[in-house]
Length: 149
Image (cartoon, rainbow, N blue to C red; front, side, top):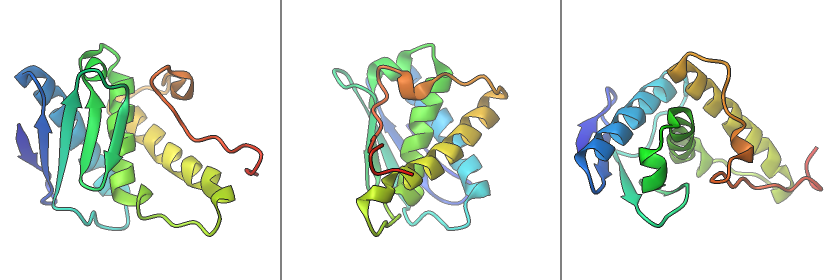
């Protein structure tokens, strides 16, 4: 399935079922539209591809594409799925472009991205009660606490 955002980015979703593709595409488009409304820089991509994989855990993105777990895409946990999709889209937008002078400051980049993501998931689900995502089995964050503030 494929659809364009209001600002011209094509979002493609490749999955084993139409229902999975539609669900991921709807969340991705909603995430893109919300992120576009709060970002001060334009997305420098003209398309982003989502590939839904069985035997894969969580989500991972590289420039222009996002890999997602099929189990996550079909789970009933809409907030967590939204969080993972939004996280990967934020990385497409600013995460891969952000530079840091020293890896000891990676915690600040993570805080910035996490704040944007929490705003996005709360806005989508109209709730302040978001899961403890950092404790979720499928969420694997970077922790360098001995170097962070």
